[in-house]
Amino acid sequence: MEPNPDISRLHLDLNRLEAATTQVSIKRPREFTCFSYDKNHNLHLDDSSLKWYYPPQAHEFPANLSAGYEQFEKHDSSQDEHLDSLLTAITHHEQQTNQLIDAKFVTWRGMMTKFFCAPYSNDDFEMNATLFQDCIFIEENWAFKRSQEAEDKKNWKSPLAPELMQFWGYKFETLATIPRPWGETPRETIESRDSEIVNNKEQYCSIVRTAIGGKVMCLGGEVDAIWDSKPKTPGAPINWVELKTSKVNRTHKDSFAFNRKLLRYWAQSFLLGVPKIIVGFRDHEGLLQSIEEYKTREIEEAVRREWKNSTNWNWRPWVCINFTSELLDWAQQIIKADPQQSGVWRIRFRKQTNNVELFKVEETGHGRILTEEFVKWRTLRAQSLNPDANPKNQDVDDIMG
Figure 1: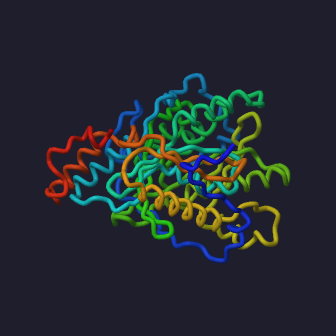
Figure 2: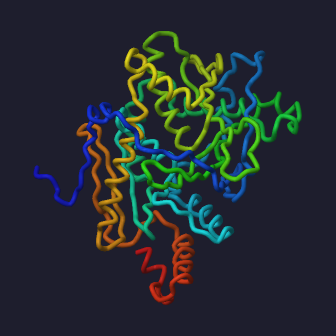
Figure 3: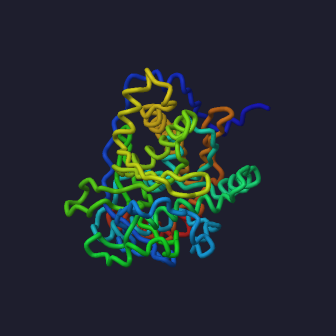
């Protein structure tokens, strides 16, 4: 079959990327706003769902991570939430500060994590992107995600249900967090966490400004907990904590697999500026055996220090960073060169070919990537600054498509 001339391709050349001797510049992520989902998954433009890290005590081990599974208050993830909450928070921030963010890319942290991990991942991905006011907005292609989930479920080989193993992670979060700082939390609240109903509808989302290779990005992502308290200085580093669960490492093969898993842990935390990762190690029956702390920076430093003389590490942090920068440069060049300056693009990665593909799926508009509220706000803002270039009778529906 002849290649489709309308599809642009970026080849992922791992040998070239690993041979690189330099890394593109990066900017430390700085939180500039946030939002919360409450226990009913209602949106609040504040930090009301922030949790504090407080680990289970020694006498609580081994903790049964399956306890309470039947009462799990699970968020309905069957609906595509797009970038809606992220755009609502950005709109609110811009209106409060009377200043637009300067990002050239806006997306969830999870999408950038997929870019970071692509050189060493066996997973395909698909995303949708659109250009609006010189910024590219990227979301997951929901239909592809759902089809992948169905395929994964069909091929599941463990005797334990995947839903139960996912629950273990949420249970660990419940056991390792409290709703207020330790000094403000009643003792009975701390001691009753094992019987607390697990609810993953409640989330705190940090929104940060960062940059890779000079490309300014706005990323939104869930944060599990904070170690101490938020600093009063805007943009100062925050002692966030990322909580994970993993199988106890009993063999060299287990350790090798865990180090591979650390790639995703590191990427997720690196992108949002999370300095600590707390891993709860559990056995095959879901019993929590121990907890270990990893510093995000030290994971990267260990790989850089040891990769030449050790078989423990099969990924390179500079490869992840440089490839993501290349991908963003490539996508930005193609999308911004489009004369229509509109439409929806598909970003598709297939591991079998190691190609990232970019092609248009809608010629005009922005699909459902952007909300009407966000487009209206930005359009009216542009009109107020330059009324001659943005006629006031332009309808939002014309922009949305």
